[in-house]
Image (cartoon, rainbow, N blue to C red; front, side, top):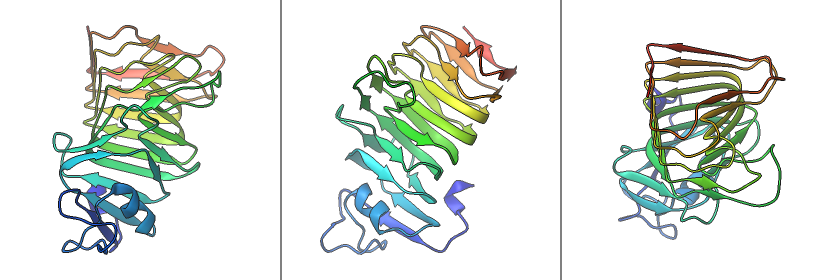
Length: 232
């Protein structure tokens, strides 16, 4: 359970009642912005984000979990100005119970870069109850979710209405997606497997009304396994 990260450290954020000036990150005096909560946290820690819409392009940190009140109520909105969440390379990334929307990544041709919704290169990531929707990337950028990690585990996540040049999810390493929904996405592929010897395992996932399927780079020597999944 990512909401119970083994650490006594918790920083609280509430956009309605908090203040980055007078707040101290406690439940009684929360910060107003998620970035202030991240900057104030020392790993391992949890930034607990109250219900609300937070317009932000976040620079996240290794070992600092972002935990919302629920994907229907806690929303991180990139405002179509940049990536919504960008982790430093080789981080341990944990994101739970929130929505990531309106991310934008654009620029020149660079297929080692991407992640309009979330970006992490190296390290590991755990996603649970996260909804990625209405994110997009322009020509030359890859992935609504760009996770070139050693391990990725996503549970009960949704990827909806995203538009991307190359792929919705760009992965490498060992990847496990469980009880996830992929719907109404427009792109050349749902997954692009780019690193050497990666593996994707899909369990109880549903793919519905997407523009394309799953792409396996012929030079990656990777594998895809699907169990009890629906494709339509």
